[in-house]
Image (cartoon, rainbow, N blue to C red; front, top):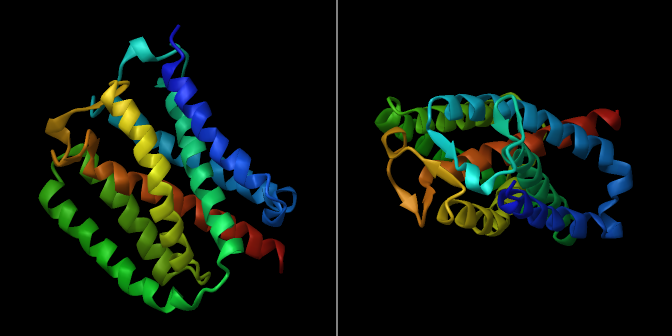
Length: 225
């Protein structure tokens, strides 16, 4: 058994542990919303990740894995689907406490339109490839719902949390793809990488964090009624 991927997951877990230890974040009061949001996120994204694995779009290298699986996915990958958005959600809540001003929310829709435009363009150019098809379809669907159906406004705060969360994202995926513990089939991607990280992976992470933040805000707003 090799614990490389597992140790990377546990190292990433230090971020939410440290941030949630800050009293102002009120983790005790919000823990049920945080845990439920992240668990739903894991279940939701385990489905497309399972398909991507079955279609050999994503390949996990056994020498870096413990060999334990669930739903035919390495347990380390499922743990990453939990820890990565949990870290982003912790960053989101920390920034909300540290910088409560939300005046820039009025500009968030314009940025969302740009992101949705990117999704549409990537689907046009990459709809025959599984990774861009899955990634940009999911993100586009989420953004359309959140911007045009959902009434809770949080997108500016989401975008700033996403930008900061790219730091641990690059660190983790940089290590995983350089080892390589994880490899991507270039025939099923846009074949445009930043370092060793596929362009699509940034937006796959964006979709994961967006769902987690939305669910957290939804559960919390309903509890306050």
